[in-house]
Length: 173
Image (cartoon, rainbow, N blue to C red; front, side, top):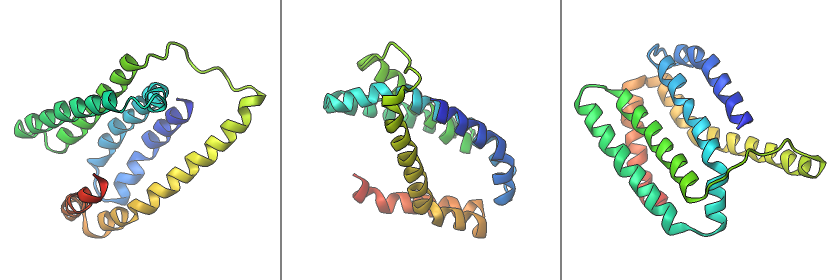
């Protein structure tokens, strides 16, 4: 939770710089609102891990489906009402909120983690490396989007991102 809060602060601070990089001033508020998803991910992490450990795949699938249907309907309704790109962002935040709340309901975690002891220090150290590894993996898999957005602009990036998502659906699913 502390690491994700730190990432929220960093993203909030660099949002104007990223918007300037892409020559898209509307990106600043979008990034700042999107950073809230990092807190939601952290809040549901322990309960999600408990469900995964218990192999509660059916419950997790039902939750994911319900969140997907509700957020999908929200996207369509908001887009139909003229909210543009905010439709996608609001639906994403709603999806993550439903999932985090659902994880808490399915596997309540009633206490906050304690500050790491010496025994936990090795786990924390390994976790930092795992977080860095995931960050570098994410950047390496998204570098084409970074370049496309910078070189071709937001309209072309939207088309490219949609095409990329559709093309990867068979592999992802």
